[in-house]
Image: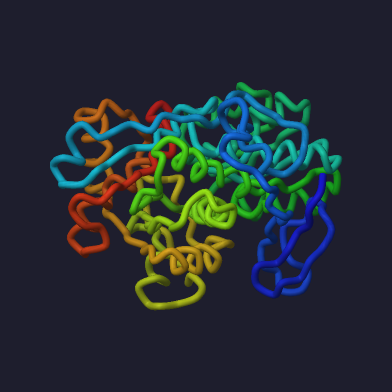
Length: 370
């Protein structure tokens, strides 16, 4: 496996390994290797590993992730007067976009010698990690909020992972997994919110959008919790620009629930880093992250592409979920409905204009919801 780990904040470089944070400034690390000289006609196969030349050079690990549907809107788009498509990530093997990141992260950590992985998750990332660890023959231990969705927890257990239910809000699960990894050095913290390899898999959303559309949309609207998906999408489009495949980048808009919107608050106040918030209750449990570690990176990425961050209320989230099912035939979990719920607000604010091409990320299937 070639490449290096680099700090996006202070620029420090270090050799590949399982480290997550820069030893100098504690910022989350990013994976870097030179972009190869590759054209679209050089790609082979389908799904995530079709983009192997642009991914870390490790033996692929795959359950058939990627290649998800891009569905034209039947009613919502025409009603709003925009050219709207939905990228349905619920079509991935475990039912969410997290499979993209987990496939690459587990493949990389296996190549680096890890044999037991741990993470904290409200459900989707835990299911993805458990599934790919099962395929790779690695042990998995997941720390989850005791209140997490029942279907998600049953899915994690079905893959044979050890499930640790942690009382209290999501940050308690994060504290528990960190303590466990300190106590057992054989247990590698495979954080989907921080891992430099997880983001690499998420870049493939951008690659697929360009291939499927044959162009760059004006806007991509993304539900955000930890922010890895929005960060990966921006970085993916930037890679395609640097390769000469595209000439411009889309505006990327991050959407959070009003009950827990640290990135939106920072964006509106012009801050470079999110201020931790006290999270309220929200149906969008996957976005209930009060202090996203990559928050500063996400804010910089949004600024680079002229994007924005907006918050939507619980009623708007649930109404969008209902409309996606009844008007578009797309059954999604509440977190996935965040981006669709934000469309009227983005139009009202002039961030999106009538007639423009918009892709909304639907991040997980409704079968995940309790």
